[in-house]
Length: 637
Image (cartoon, rainbow, N blue to C red; front, top):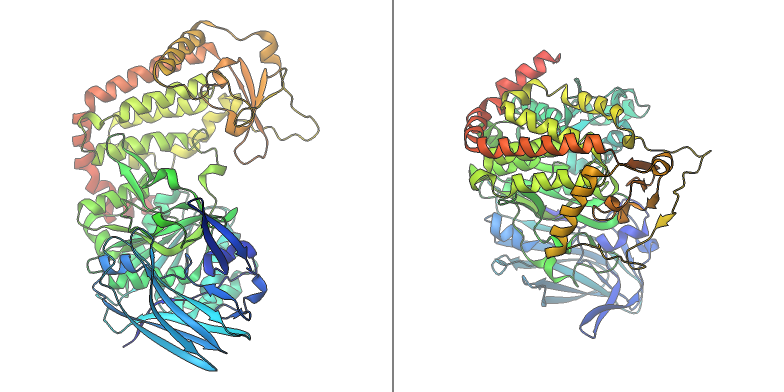
């Protein structure tokens, strides 16, 4: 039986920005050891459909792109597939060239065929030389007349390790339009639907998905595959845990595919993730990459890891992300040819084998933040790896356009990182985590961001209470965190168009235009600046005129922790550009909060071994199907 591993696809939308992710009609050269684009004949008008495109006379088009090159190293490393076939269908005179790369990105030509008329050309290829990395792809060069690309697939005759379908779990809170768009994209692709057992839309909001005008049509198209589940807002972890629990009851499902609600999907990615999951030698979590929904050729997340010493997540090659495919394509980016092994994958898109859930349990009752990383780390310790799979991706608003480290989510950032470390850190007393956490508080306080410090101190107190609090406050922690914001005026985003907010000393500009002596202090100057600024904040009260009107204005990118402390007050742009926040020095709160932070962190340091034992002993109960069933029952399942 022939199994389609990967279909060659073209953009669903006539969006020129997306073209570099699918097809590459560019010519590059090396000038002064740099890759330089010397011509670009990309034109969305040459895309004739989801699987067809036009190659103009005398032109060369490469399918060595993110969505259409074949990630050979991942298939060789994680599956037993060794023999594959590439079939390319064309019409008109053309030359088809097949290439491979090694782990360093060096291209090597493997085969060439000249074709005429209506042609279906098959190349037999082996997966035996990709242990360090490498892709396969093909180029098409037209002759002196137009050639048409009619479609292509990467296939194998080898049998998968498992044949079950996947259930999809979409957790949503008041994002019905996004959910409808995702459901429509799935329904429009029968080859995706045939791999799905159920689509669970776990609706936790007040703006219901099934109340949308387009819902009846998409529900009719998906039939019994679609199931809407309503429950109170238990966060992402509560929604995804519900999808996991429902999938456990589905004998036809071998996997649950978790999807965020506010995303734009590439349907072929859903199909690829399930197919790859079927072929992996051992049950494996298959994660998708994240492109920026607002800058769609920009890749933000490839392979992500958790550094054990500070117990903090990051990209494997942090300095290389995000990567902008609009400037440098796949073939010219050597690092993207390396096989990158991940510790976890975000739950914007992650396929989880049902066997893993049965063995290690469901999501941690974390509400949001760190539930995905903790689950994948837990799975890895049980012998189930996570693969961050190239060519499997969606679009999601990146964290660069959010203020979630200083809004109500600061509680969950702080608490859940500590809980995950208590559960999994191998470092004595959590390594450098406690020191790093204390520094975060200091930075917030110096920047006059008092609300996140109040939340983080609350998080520390809850962590010290023990693991039982995780389940008890699952439904109440978020409302309580948001209610606390009313006590902190800096949380208000001022958007009043009738009154332009101004600063007494105007806008401060840095970056490439201007620097000051405290730009990114390091070494001795870092210690000196921190010490003197802490003393100043302890003793100095703001001048009345700086309380009445902000002293200076900063753009979001310039509002760093070593700049804001030099002023009594500041006007700072919100991350999404929707308005401005006003930060004003509050000596009394600063004194109380920094003392509390130091004492709580000291208490956590002293009690770390005992707390770690408690949390680890309680993990099975917190994540068991029975525990989650009780939570859903109490919330009106």
